[in-house]
Image 1 (spheres, each protein chain N blue to C red):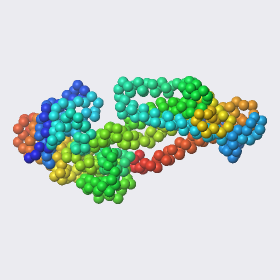
Image 2: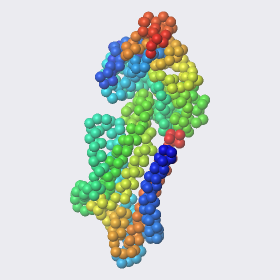
Image 3: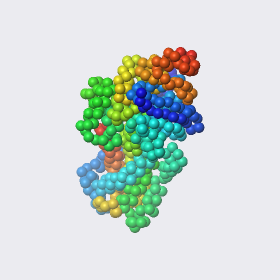
Image 4: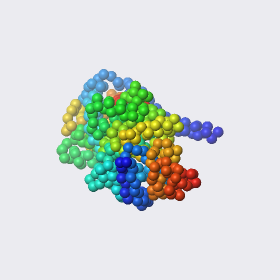
Amino acid sequence: MVNALAVGAVSLATLVVLTPLVMILGTVIIHGMAGVNWSFFTQIPKPVGEAGGGMANAIVGSAMILLVASAIGIPLGVGAGIFLAEYGRNFYGNIVRFTSDVLNGIPSIVIGITAYALVVLKQGHFSLLAGGIALGIMMVPTVCRTTEEVLLMVPQSIREAALGLGIPQWRTTLSVVVRTATAGIVTSIMLAFARVAGETAPLLFTSLNNSFWNWKLSEQTASMPMQIFVYSISAYDDWIQKAWTGAMVLIAMIIFTVILVRFVTNRGMLKGAR
Amino acid sequence: MDIGIHVKDLNAWFGKTQALYNIALEIPAKRTTAIIGPSGCGKSTFVRCLNRMHETIPQATVKGEVKIADLDVYGKGVSPVWIRRRVGMVFQKANPFPTMSIYDNVAAGLKLNGFSNRRQLDAVVERSLRSAALWDEVKDIAKKKSGASLSGGQQQRLCLARALAVEPEVLLMDEPASALDPISTAKIEDLIFELKEKYTVVIVTHNMQQAARVAEYTAFFLMGNLVEFDKTEKMFTKPSDKRTEDYITGRFG
């Protein structure tokens, strides 16, 4: 009886959690599918008043910003996580832990302003690089703390086995501990990646927007979230339609990236290991 | 009789708690020495001091002298990493590297120290697995299956093969068979019997019959002190200390 109640309660909770997800995805797909066509993925926006055009430059811009963000956020986050788990049981570790948690709680727009002050003002103009730095900073605390958690889950006996073989500490950490926890670390990176991929506020102050192609780190650039934002508050039906499609494509891109990374990292590992 | 390991005035602590008191003994080379005693008497701590694994635990400290042949284990400038390559260890719970294949587990000690000659690695892996009596069971799956996919007894023999692959002089075994069934235990014991031809073996055990079966020499520890160290035969028939006799006859512990 109690068991049935408990099962009922958790099932209900699951349903409550899933409902908004399904509703959001459903709405986005219903509205978004209408705007899916070849030019959406291949063309840049047409001038105001002209029909057609697409978000190709924003898709590329987002991909490049995320690439820069990952290049900053992943090594810093994973590195700090390794430090915390393997060498951070002390005062310095606690400082890093505290700082990381605070950073995690800072509103994304404040991070955007910080990147504006540090990069945009120095460069004298908005840039893709600044956007990447802002999102990269946002990735660090998530990657760092979850990496620490998964590394701590690696049993102490595994570390002892490696040390007992005369393998130096640094090698033990990299080739044994981190390798054992790779699946978990990848998950932590994907979490952080998915979280920043849809961020708009930090980009307002950094990469801003661009109606044309941009392939340079030093120029301002279009990005999916910015383009969706601009289109969704516009007065034109065509643009609002593009905003829906953009939202759908952005979600699809995030899901696709996560699945792709999982697939690639899983293939390299042994089946019996998990 | 050659002396394999020379221990003098060895003291060990966990934080402020002292775990070993002035241990002094001479462990013979190319023989098997059993360390017996009740739980918490410092057996494991003692063997972990021999390859400097004790100090990997936070706040654990050691003072004293350990010499393996001419090597001063706690000498100035002596790296624990170097010591551990000469003193192999098998732990109580089998701990193969879960993400590595059986082959890579055995090769790990060499590979992760920068050794990469494929043909020589193949030879070392085969020889080590044969020494651990595991070769016939895994030769076809060594590169395909994870070390974690083996049974408990096989995993422990895999750990033994892994320790042998780096060709240590001394092999420490911390209750290597305490989590295994009688058949797997018998296999490990047979192996220990063969290993002493090449290695100085120190085995910690709870099981006094096991000590009697595999070891020529036995040391009895009690509350961080070495009570008695002698030939196993003598220890089990005519112990010279009353406490040893009480423990062996089962009056306590």
